[in-house]
Image 1: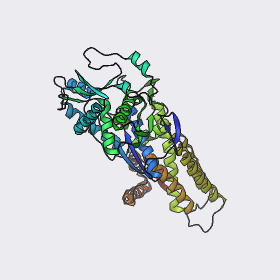
Image 2: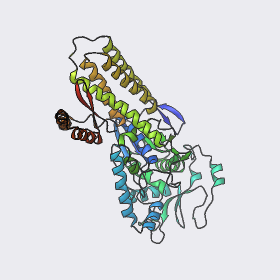
Image 3: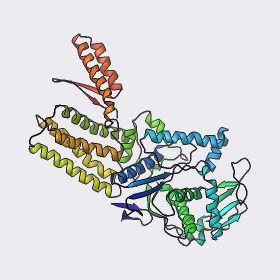
Image 4: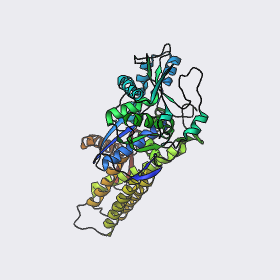
Length: 475
C-alpha cells in the first residue's frame, strides 16, 4: 500500500512504526459555528482512510482534537453575548451530532484544549528551556530561525517568508516570522495562570501537545485540510521536533483538497458555505458520503446541487442492484453445479474486488475504486435477467462484495443491519397483503395511499405478473 506524503511530495510505501498498528491524528474543528461541507469532506475522507486501514487488519488508534478556546470563539461570543465556554460546548455538540449523522466513526480520543492547559504550559516551558522560545511583552514566542528545518512541509523559503512578514505594533516578538505559543490575557478574555502570567495557548501548540500525549513523540499519520499545511502544520513540526530532540515526529502527512464553489474555496470567511444540517434536510447522509468519495481525497471537489443529485442517482443504482440480489435470493436454488453464467458473475466479482483493493492501496483512491463497484452492479443485474433459476451461492458472493464495500465506504448500513431488523420486513410484507386485498375490493384510493406512504418512508412497491415486490430506495 502506498500513500502520498505531503512532506516528501511523493507516494511512499506505507510502513507504520509498530507492526499491525496505526496511530493517527486528525486536526479537529475550532468550535464556533456549524460544520459545513468543506469540513465534512475532510472528516469523511479520513473516516474512509481509517476504515480501510482497519479492513486491512490494522489496529487504528485515532485522535481528533477540539479547539475550544480561540480568537474566533471569543469574537463570536462577544457578538452573541454568550460565555465563550458555553458557545464552544454548544457547537462541539453540534459537530459530533453532524459526524454521527454522516456515519463518521467516533475517534478513540477527543482531547479539548481547555482540558490540557497544564500539559501545554509544560510543553512551552520545555521549548523555553531548550532555547527555542522567548517571552515578549504580550506572550511567549517560538523563534523560527533557530529551527534549521523550518519550511520543510510547506516548502517555505524562510528568507522569502521574512520579507512578507512584519511585526505589528504592540507585538512582543523579535522577528516577523516568529509565532506565538502562549498569549498573555487581554481584559475580558478567558485566561489561565502560567509562569508568564495569566493567558491562554496559541493555536499551533495545542495540537503538538495533545497528539504527543496520546500518540507518543512519534506516530504514523497526521491529517487535515490543505489549508493547514502552512502555517499550522509547519509550526507544529518545528515546535514538536525542537522539543523532542529533532527526531522525525510524523511519518506520513496527508491533506485533503478544498471543496470549491464557482472557482473559490468554500469557507466561512467568504460566506459561500453550506452547512451539513442544511444539506441533510434535502439529502441522506449516504448521498453526501457518496458525493465526497467520487473524487480522490487530495483533489478539489466542486460543490453543485447537480453534482449531489448525480451522486444520489448513482447510489440508487447500487441500491437497486442490492435489492435485486435480495429478491433473487428468495427464489434462488441450492446449486449442484454452476453454468457459464455463474462463472461469469463470479469472475466479475473476483476481478472487481482485486481492482477495488488496488485502487485503495494506491493512496486511498476512492474515485478509481468506484468503477469496479458499478461493474459488479451491472453484472448482477445482467445475471438475474439472463438466468431462469439463479444460484444462491454466487448471489451470496455478490452480496458479500457489497457488504465489504459498505464497511469501507460507510454505505448500505440500513441494508446490512443485524437480523433483528427483520420485523420491519415482516411489517412491509403485511402492508403489501393489505394493499392487495384493498385492490381486490377495488378500494384503489386507500391502496394507492399505502403505496405512497411506503414510498415516503423509502420503500418502493413494484407490481408485476408474479405479484408485488418491494425495494428500499431511501437514499
